[in-house]
Image 1 (cartoon, rainbow, N blue to C red):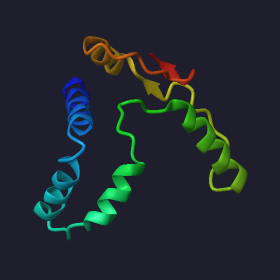
Image 2: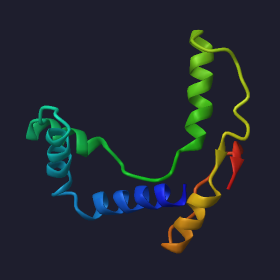
Image 3: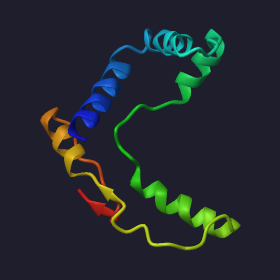
Image 4: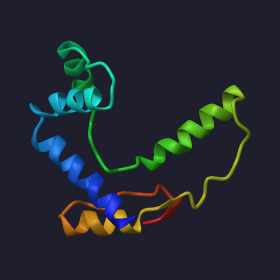
Length: 108
């Protein structure tokens, strides 16, 4: 799990450090997997709307659950303990980044 999280952090760091190269890298990977490339316009619009982060934005899960319950797609359920961010926060600390919050839904 630590190696997976490190790979994720490395990828996010690269995306942030290389905003000009990132869209081309995405297209290259799409083509490598047999998909059609996206247009430069689509990539530009998409990348303008994306914030790359390792933060799982735990607070948003509470909101998503509340919305899903309100529209009847799921029943109310406990999501307490769903996050264990200890390894992620250890890696973030090693790189000087602030810890991320579990929003009371697990371990930090």
